[in-house]
Length: 76
Image 1: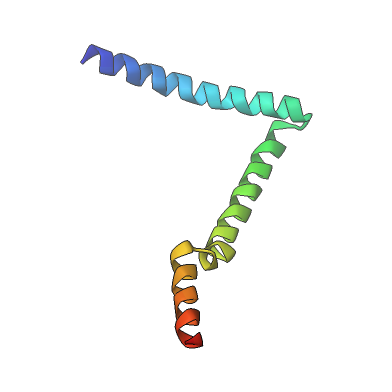
Image 2: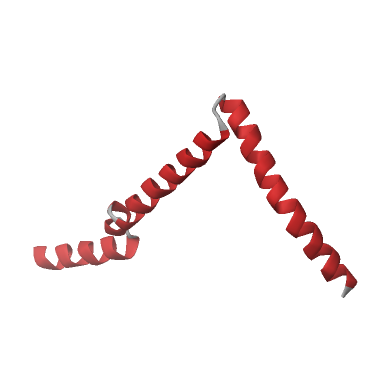
Protein backbone atom coordinates (compact mmCIF):
# COMPACT_ATOMS: atom_id res chain seq x y z
CA UNK A 1 0.00 0.00 0.00
CA UNK A 2 2.79 2.39 0.86
CA UNK A 3 4.61 1.53 -2.38
CA UNK A 4 1.51 2.37 -4.41
CA UNK A 5 1.16 5.67 -2.61
CA UNK A 6 4.83 6.41 -3.19
CA UNK A 7 4.66 5.54 -6.91
CA UNK A 8 1.51 7.59 -7.39
CA UNK A 9 2.99 10.59 -5.61
CA UNK A 10 6.17 10.40 -7.64
CA UNK A 11 4.22 9.95 -10.88
CA UNK A 12 1.88 12.84 -10.09
CA UNK A 13 4.80 15.19 -9.52
CA UNK A 14 7.43 13.77 -11.85
CA UNK A 15 5.44 13.28 -15.07
CA UNK A 16 4.26 16.91 -15.45
CA UNK A 17 7.75 18.14 -14.59
CA UNK A 18 9.33 15.75 -17.13
CA UNK A 19 6.92 16.85 -19.86
CA UNK A 20 7.62 20.52 -19.18
CA UNK A 21 11.35 19.82 -19.14
CA UNK A 22 11.19 17.86 -22.44
CA UNK A 23 9.17 20.65 -24.06
CA UNK A 24 11.62 23.27 -22.83
CA UNK A 25 14.61 21.28 -24.10
CA UNK A 26 12.97 20.70 -27.47
CA UNK A 27 12.16 24.40 -27.76
CA UNK A 28 15.74 25.31 -26.91
CA UNK A 29 17.20 22.80 -29.35
CA UNK A 30 14.95 24.09 -32.15
CA UNK A 31 15.53 27.70 -31.07
CA UNK A 32 11.77 28.30 -30.81
CA UNK A 33 9.60 29.72 -28.04
CA UNK A 34 7.74 27.13 -25.95
CA UNK A 35 4.22 28.28 -26.97
CA UNK A 36 5.21 27.82 -30.61
CA UNK A 37 6.37 24.28 -29.85
CA UNK A 38 2.98 23.56 -28.26
CA UNK A 39 0.98 25.02 -31.14
CA UNK A 40 3.17 23.27 -33.72
CA UNK A 41 2.60 19.98 -31.90
CA UNK A 42 -1.16 20.57 -31.98
CA UNK A 43 -0.99 21.35 -35.71
CA UNK A 44 1.02 18.20 -36.46
CA UNK A 45 -1.39 16.10 -34.42
CA UNK A 46 -4.34 17.54 -36.36
CA UNK A 47 -2.61 16.83 -39.69
CA UNK A 48 -1.79 13.24 -38.73
CA UNK A 49 -5.35 12.65 -37.55
CA UNK A 50 -6.75 14.06 -40.79
CA UNK A 51 -4.41 11.84 -42.81
CA UNK A 52 -5.33 8.73 -40.85
CA UNK A 53 -9.04 9.38 -41.30
CA UNK A 54 -8.72 10.35 -44.96
CA UNK A 55 -6.03 8.62 -46.98
CA UNK A 56 -5.04 6.21 -44.24
CA UNK A 57 -8.45 4.62 -44.26
CA UNK A 58 -8.21 3.86 -47.99
CA UNK A 59 -4.77 2.29 -47.43
CA UNK A 60 -6.08 -0.18 -44.88
CA UNK A 61 -4.54 -3.59 -45.72
CA UNK A 62 -7.84 -5.43 -45.23
CA UNK A 63 -9.65 -3.04 -47.56
CA UNK A 64 -6.88 -3.27 -50.15
CA UNK A 65 -6.95 -7.09 -49.98
CA UNK A 66 -10.73 -7.06 -50.49
CA UNK A 67 -10.40 -4.73 -53.50
CA UNK A 68 -7.64 -6.89 -54.97
CA UNK A 69 -9.74 -10.05 -54.60
CA UNK A 70 -12.73 -8.36 -56.20
CA UNK A 71 -10.56 -7.13 -59.07
CA UNK A 72 -9.02 -10.59 -59.51
CA UNK A 73 -12.46 -12.26 -59.61
CA UNK A 74 -13.66 -9.75 -62.15
CA UNK A 75 -10.75 -10.56 -64.46
CA UNK A 76 -11.59 -14.28 -64.54
